[in-house]
Length: 99
Image (cartoon, rainbow, N blue to C red; front, top):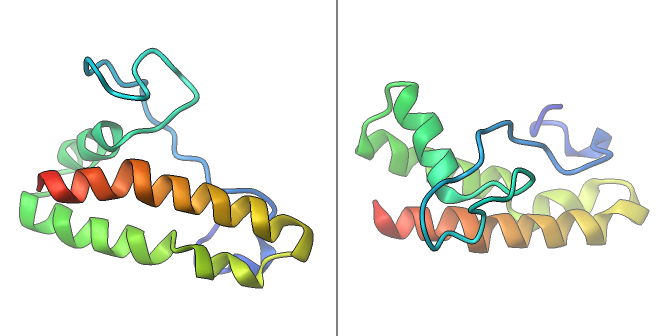
């Protein structure tokens, strides 16, 4: 599924990562939930530097901005926008603030 083609999206994009083991994380012990630690580990293992990570977070914030989902099928828009808000607020924003 491509974020470049939001009109054809039928569900929120899934990120495949290992569950978080950080104490106190909202996703700790939940295999279904992605957190900013997961994203950071994924990017670090791919060779990203902190400067590049910050740029990647900005890019992801643009890709997952709720307004991008306003062109999806009408019956899916509200759900996709809520998921995007959650992803931005609970995952990307805390990570960005740590960088």
